[in-house]
Length: 108
Image (spheres, helix red, strand yellow):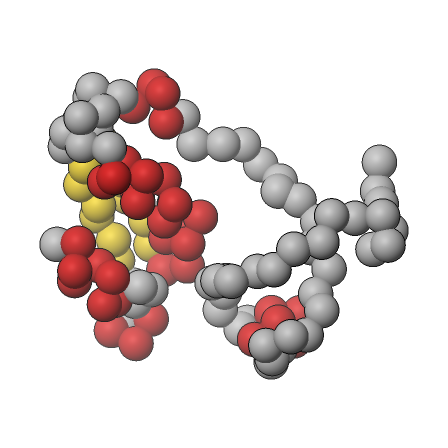
């Protein structure tokens, strides 16, 4: 069931990650602090965090595909007693396309 903006939960988005490749993503990139943006979702399924507990975890991502995995990676790194071995294999087309470059360097 869809809700109108007046019925929807309101909140503040403090971080978003996207790449401008079309009209919609370019419009999102062009937003400024304080602009209102309607969001639907999430769609898809969650990452199986409980299934990964205690086992070595290897995450493979490319380009913008790292964005939806970021929170799972950070959560695992914050809980080394549950996730003792976490490895990320990440690739991008070129150095300018690397997401979270400074964060990744700090985590290395």
